[in-house]
Length: 129
Image 1 (cartoon, rainbow, N blue to C red):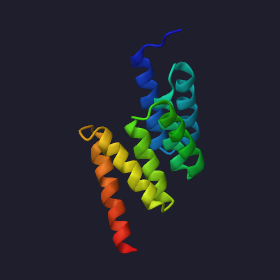
Image 2: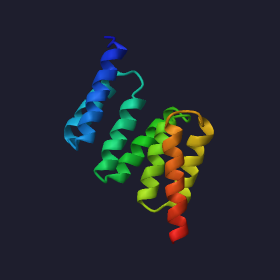
Image 3: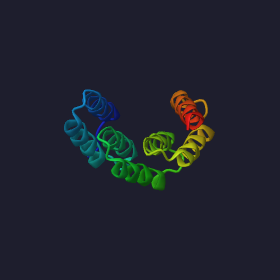
Image 4: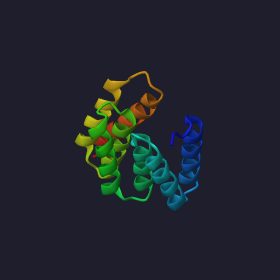
């Protein structure tokens, strides 16, 4: 059964709204449901990684990002989420590598501004140490 892209986008939007409202269980349920509907579940897994990150379940978030990157080594969102995980764990060398990959892959994407902000944040943390 083929689900229209508009309906997938709407479900993802509702999931993100739940995530930002800190209703993590609902967000996780929506993203898992989207993942079951898709042939390639990368967008759902990156969203699930974000929920796991918000819940401080960093190992789960990292595993989801790695699964996405095993499927698509050019997924900038997965590298960016992975960098946030590494920053939260104070693994700054790993964060720097993930940020470099994200920036090198698609420097003109809208997510590049987030990558640049994370890079500046990491550099400031290094100076303070």
